[in-house]
Structure formats: C-alpha cells, structure tokens
Image (cartoon, rainbow, N blue to C red; front, side, top):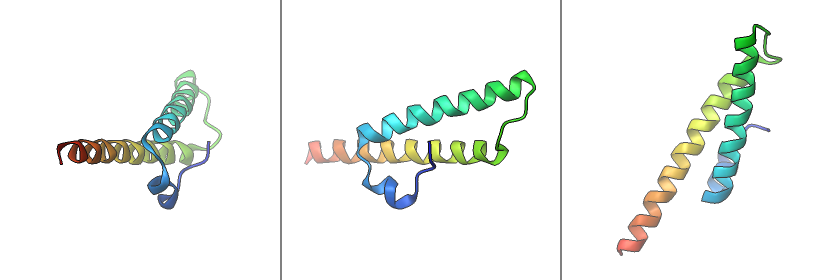
Length: 74
C-alpha cells in the first residue's frame, strides 16, 4: 500500500481511513515478523513511513469523531 499524502488524507472519510489504517497495520505486522525471524526487511525506511502514516490516520479519525460529536450537540 502506498503512503498517503496530506491532500489525500484531508479528502478521506472516516470509513475509508479506517480501512487504510487496517491495511497499514497488517503491512507493519508483516515487516515486524520478518525482523523477528531474523531476515532484513526489503525497505527498512518503509517501516518508519508506515508508522507515521498510521499515526496520521489515527489523528484524522479522532478529529472526524470530534467533529461529528460537536455537530450532534449543536
């Protein structure tokens, strides 16, 4: 899965962001299992990018949840 750009992040809805988050977590799990087995990952820098993108998606989902809650209270 490709790393998501800022402009793409802003356009995602909550459901699509959740799906991408799950895909990235699976990819990170595969990379971590490779490391645990003693093999080097194909691209070590990719692990760092995946972790950062996961964090960005989590923040995005959290912000969208807050927006939904604030709209319900208005």
